[in-house]
Length: 302
Image (cartoon, rainbow, N blue to C red; front, side):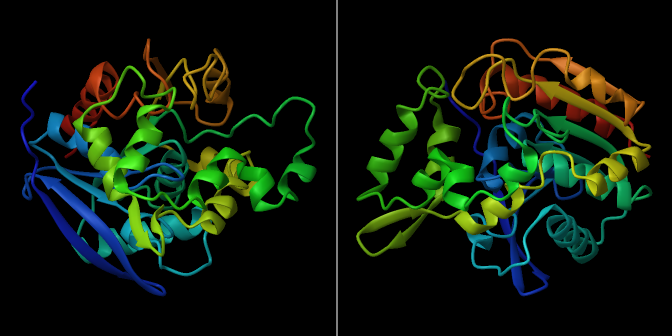
């Protein structure tokens, strides 16, 4: 199928410690959407969404420690990401946006919404943004004391592997359970952008230490739960029934998200059938559904 190419305007935004790389898609005069990627991803995970809603101004950063922002130094963590995105909105002169976040990006979107109620008009969470369940039989304190290698497991292995060629990295993702039946041009471009040249080949750009620091903040710390209770904007969360390896029950078990209405009374849960944690955003019916929800949020901007 022919795909309309969406122009990407690559920007750099001054933040503490250096510059944040930001990709801007769509109509520069259109209503602004701040699109925030997941924990090991980059701005290019938003390409399908940008193409589906060309009338908006979609602003997608490479978060600190990822993509072309991978050299930015610590501190990492959700609050630092929110600070970086506040600096991005300041630099771009944006005083009212829709914030859309995938996976960990949803957590950042919620922190920004809590801190900037006049600036963030509405929040769209894509399979993320609400505290993750601690694995059965695991003590949270013990989990947080794990080494980065033990905490991240297969993700650590991928992020520290040197792939001999770009084609080898493409083959890795093509064989991944999430993409065996869902490979497309957007995923290929995402994988290619992810790489940085090193001795012996190419390595994924995400800083493993940054990823580990962020991962430890996704299980519902007291300060994050306090932030959730301060969010007054409309919040829609889309749930994928399949997880990172295309396995049920997904990142969130059925019914779990509805339970967070005790913290976010105005939370609306949307089930997206037949997608996994990646394909809910990166093409096909998942991206179509996210685009529909984001377009609705944008229509309510003043």
